[in-house]
Length: 263
Image (cartoon, rainbow, N blue to C red):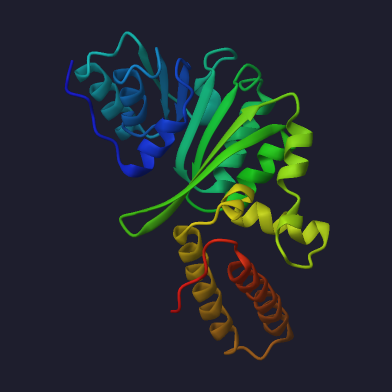
């Protein structure tokens, strides 16, 4: 067997959230680095690596064989959760794609009965984290942990959720925005927590502040572009963006332990 592979900071954060002893299925596994590490390290007894694109799938097959793990890591070629059968895995990981696509893959897996016996999800959407959080609530997964990190100039969030009998009550309390010293309606508060992360906001970090400072700068640029148009639609969109920006700014200003740095 080859030496233990070294993961990126992003993939290591995902690996660290996987419950030891779980049978893992990594969907969109690329070169199967995560499954190889999880089995090599002894954290998981077996793994499935699912990959749609032929080049990465072939690389995954080779990498698993070179690691001497072909007997315990099954590299499968297919789209999303079509590579799984019910009962194949305890934990599903999905990383490195947009939240919209990730939510569609999860929902297709749910509808196809592929997630019935899955106890745990570890998810790393590149964008659209709010869509993934909404899906978890709708399908009664209880969010346990959220990690935010920066690597190579990009900021990533990792979400860890489990299937729980008390998921509804857990999520109801989790997405109650009353801990923020802001006057928000229930729907506005919930939307805010879906976007910014209910656990991230409860234990704010400098990385969280930086992410949303960058988001404010992006929204400011969009508003500037809209000033080039005289249409009423552009004015309405700009007003909506300004309202969103004001709310984000208020949230950043009231976070309990971290204040936004001056830009």
